[in-house]
Image 1 (tube, rainbow, N blue to C red):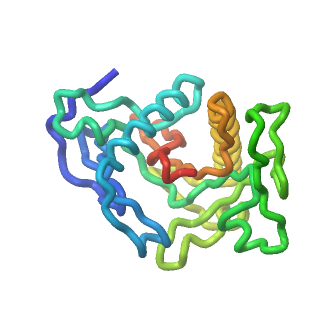
Image 2: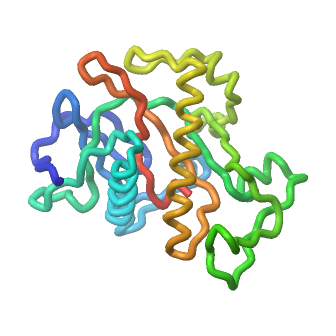
Length: 236
């Protein structure tokens, strides 16, 4: 399904890599930018074509997740008759939970900076990536390691424990993020990673780590936590 989104409403929010426009009371248009960032946004530059690639990747992944029963905010691609259809998609309006949910199969990257005594995981090249013959030197997490980070660029997105999340008593769209909902999001984070990990393996690739975000939608008073934001090449 594709939606005609020629008439966009007000700009609701603009971040480093995307803009969110109101379409109606329940839907938004999310438009990607040709911008890449690093270091909590301190480093950034334009990269022509990045927005199109991001949107194509995001749409394919969210459509797949929807098809296997993961509840997300994604609705559809934008109809080709719209001038910006190549770098925009339609989603349900939601209040974003300011937490990044990270899954790790392999100890590498920022995890090693915080845990320098752990041996870096490196996949051994030369063999097809399958469940049975995946080879790894160094530390591999089984089940995947889950971490949560509070979205705060000024403080470099600090790590938050499960207890910190519950104690914060975050409330979005009238829904309190209590212990049961934290567990729900942890379970979904692991499920999304393991689902996409299998997809990567069909292409002889290994998914090392990734991050997702959640939002809360309000459908006529019914509150629901959904996988939200974008899932693209900046997510892993």
